[in-house]
Length: 239
Image (tube, rainbow, N blue to C red):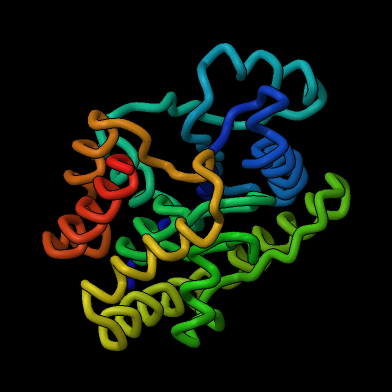
């Protein structure tokens, strides 16, 4: 598997208090600011969902460090996020609460190593399929200092052992494809979201986002999975 030199990592989230308390983008930035001092190769942190003006806040809070951070504002063009994912050394999903984590599944489809919170539907799905050994598990408490340390350790481990984690990522995708049908996988995604019983967790809330999701690239653009999950989400919206 080809491995890009340097360290390139990605997360999602915004820096306003309401969103950051869930997505934890700020602690990813904190962890990245630490590891960037130890990496002399090219490096970049991309955050999908924040606006360019948020970078000034990051610069003020890290005035002593030169950080390469790229803002990727939310877009309905899924090709943008697929392209960004394809360039990453790893993808971090340190949410305290996550309905499912579709971007994490998209990262799996592209053989990108994952560091994900146990408090997510995606982790629950991988655990149910006995595949959690192929991701870096984040057991987060909500304490920013200790959680930042855990994400830093995840970054350090994956950066220092890129080839091992790329093989794990490829194996995870292969095993996921071997061990489940598209219908079962789609059903697992929907059931995971429904089990949260909170509408705020659903990543798709209107027809425009549904159309965007239908065009997504989950596990090599499998039409059956997209249609199945689309139909189930439509049922949710029609209730």
